[in-house]
Image (tube, rainbow, N blue to C red; front, side, top):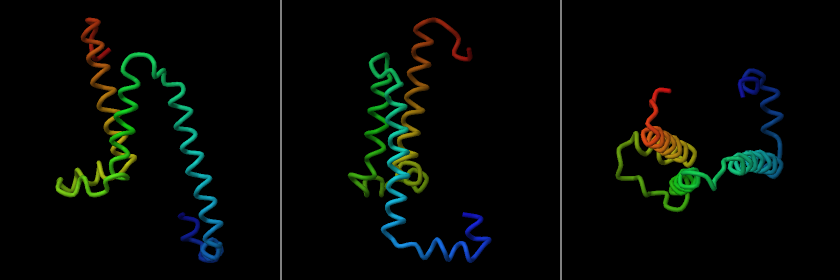
Length: 115
């Protein structure tokens, strides 16, 4: 993007591409990202521990802005910024649940949380 901004002729070349070409390239890019995510989920051992719950909750909360776009409209601006985006909402939920379950497992095992 910096290169396109610094070299106007290159920016004009990219801007002259037909919309279907840009759409096709974008679709391939997003499909690749989705497949990498699916590949990571395959290796996540969803049949062990709380991994399935963490993944399901993250996907569910991440889909909320898609299926109900105005669900967060009465919340503060910072909340809308974080949870109004599918990616950040899913990340926050997955991270918080993972850390909470990890902490609970360590306490149940009697080991130090800092270890």
